[in-house]
Length: 443
Image (cartoon, rainbow, N blue to C red; front, top):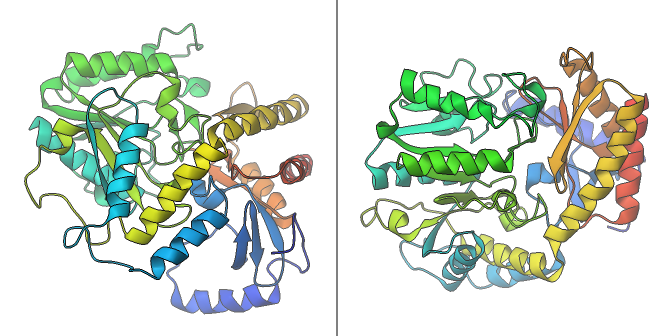
């Protein structure tokens, strides 16, 4: 790609994208929707070029998959070299070095001063499935608790743990038994009308109430939580919440599973989002930005938990594919060499003030939140009532896309605009993207 910033050459969608759209209409299910009407042909860094030659700034990053950017040269080189060697053997048939090297590095990077082991699978949902499977096997208990603004995937267990009905759970029940939910620490919309940090984290009383009214703690195997709830609208879990949750888990012999699928690999300003709290989970799931776009995910946990299952009880045909493993190893190198977590924090320090300036001018920006370069703002009809405004949210996103900036919706009320800017974005691209966002909001 020769272009270095937004370049719009045609109306959107352009003629080539329109033709592909017609093919899609006949051949792809309607339930599989796309944010933009254009079709990608190339991508580099923080840019996507479509089949008509239009170039967009990508502030979505494949929904958190591209922290290291589109097509990092080092990753592309490693992938090409591996493709010339072999594509697949199945690790359960003939293991290979990239898998064990990646497992070794993840064991070192995931917090916890104790022996750890890692299994590799294909997607975030599959990582969650295996984390729950391991937790139930190790504890010999069945109950799993999640949060009501969470997202943990689209499999049946993933849907059962996820908190949003439409479009994820609507008319797909019944769901996996022995799964329970407690309210998220959604400080902007606190159910107890408290103000953080002076609230003493009273929202955790909902967990104690669940133990009394729905499921005794003796039957709960694990609690799964995202450090920042992604699809839920970038709800940042306060560090004190994590600390108290860890105490409750320890008191009742409940495992703590940290879902780092969207928050991991430098997105929040640290390698993992949990590190902001100082709390160590028993099991950690990672995915998305691990492979720079190749499908790979991991489950890292205490060695005694990971070894609690018998031979052949865990595994998957494609899990830890060698091509994806070498991509992930290069991503970890890039994170260290380019200090991407620090870059993430620097980006956040630039994005937040711009949004605060816009909030001062536009009362419909109700809340701005996030960690590092994981940033979102909530759109409301009235700053006092905080009534969500999903229509205006959609309008702003449309304005952005029509001007060459891709941003994404989130939140249980569909009124949050979230940004997952590739951490390799240039200063000029970041400034251009924020200018487009400002114009879209003002329009």
